Length: 485
Image (cartoon, rainbow, N blue to C red; front, side, top):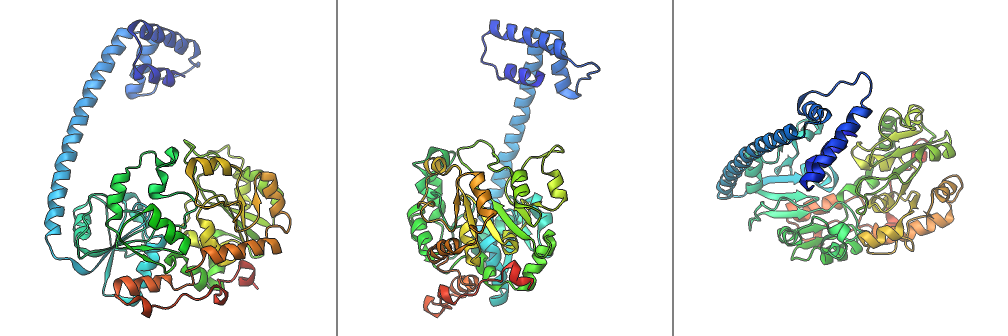
């Protein structure tokens, strides 16, 4: 209560008479509500509370003024340091840009420099096999350095070497955009791999949706798009949407998403190993629950009572929950369920492809994981309790309710009924999944990374690349049940 009162007072905007009265009442409330044996916190917060309890309005105002002056001075120093640092980095970058492009250097990044992941990781792995003369360097934030695979050559954003490799690399590969400051050299090649098939509106198509467009600089986005030489696509739907949402002169690589190759190359042994790492006993059904973000929510709101769902699904089913943390703290109702192994929080587990391989079924809402998981030809259930709100606030490219990859639940009760009967894996579910796979697994056949590497890094003609295998001729990785047979 006291903290909130002080925050309201600090915001200002009150007339002097109102401010004095607010402070007086807050002071009385602080004294009246103070617990027995209470001791004030140390530091500036303790000083603030002491002055409030004393009702020392004038001294508090003086204290505020001194702090404001101190913060302004510190801010000026920080700003000056940033300006000097930016000038130095710009000078270093410009000098590096004057050097020749290194034809044997490739810079990779994924998910805003989180680490080795997604399509860039699959391309880098294939590159080491087909073109080992090209040296990969990953851009990774300082906090994620420790998570890198041993021996990974990398740079931290803002460092001197970071700007040097960005300036001199022949190849720049990312599943998001590189910073605005990165210059597109005529003899460098930028590859935009993206990180999903679009259901929700993307790029310029977000302009009509204020919740989705908040904070986006569309002019800067267009400038970043103009640096792309290639855009990787998993299906013709994605190609059409990218060309519409990200208009420029890049070449669309209709080769499939490299990260999805594993859904055709993984073995029974691989699947057993992943399930063993996750602690899933043989014979238990694993359901991966992976919800997406809502632009219209300030924070994250749990859409399922996972404890109740786990109870209904029973001992033979384990829920792999990937997303925001559900029910944090010691009083979490999921604690006992976690201990029994019926719910496993895999929010920070990477790569997500492992989780898909380990799962017998996927439950999601509007996440692009549904398009990737469909490659496995395993059951998918859609939980769409807020479809109308999501469609209105974010915008979508097609009606998921009419083109779903499996059964659709609009409530938790409906979801529970689907998962506790045969509806999740019956003939009807298989039929809708087949139609979904024909549309959205068009180019994914296990050789996408090879096609990208041969086309971009080895310069091979499009006609000489391995052709995309027809859907009916592909063999997805074995199911967990098949892997344990």
